[in-house]
Length: 219
Image 1 (cartoon, rainbow, N blue to C red):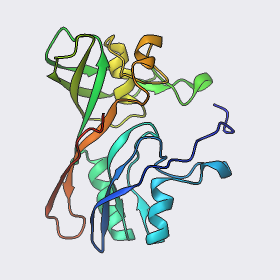
Image 2: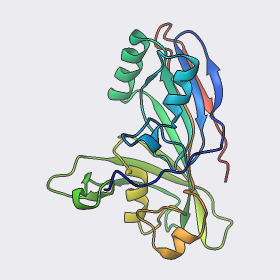
Image 3: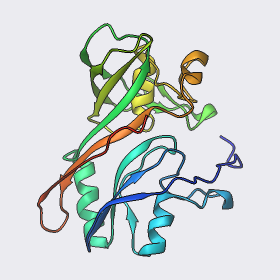
């Protein structure tokens, strides 16, 4: 991928849902990077905006620029280590809402495919049964009222790059508005990627208290 591609400035606000001395939970808008990129025009991001409030803010996980929804950031080193361990151990609960092209044949199921980076076309990912890393996503249709698309709840067990996009595309139901994996009609069906991180649950990094957040899909 060419690092000189232009990322337009995101005018949407980064909404804080919770803050204490250890963590901050935000609702990231679509079009905003999670962390700054290398080129100068990629400085605006969720992390850089939060570091203007508290320079000690540290990133724990990421969402694609085109994906909106819930993110948690750490505000000190101990909290960062504790939260990162939860993500590594897959004890964090995550759920996404997506609008996908076409009508799924089954109301629920799973997609289990090994993924790796498609290096000549990065940041795109690809299925590779020899070199790919295991990835698993559970899906459930939660609204099938539209004639040409379904709304699905996605629960990724692993957190591979572009995992949800690739898994839905491999099912034959790409996410609407996806600029990487959707065919032309599905890509043109929405002005944004219809993928939103709607649920996030974890243990507070210091107290251990269960924390759960929910954000409705804005599409």
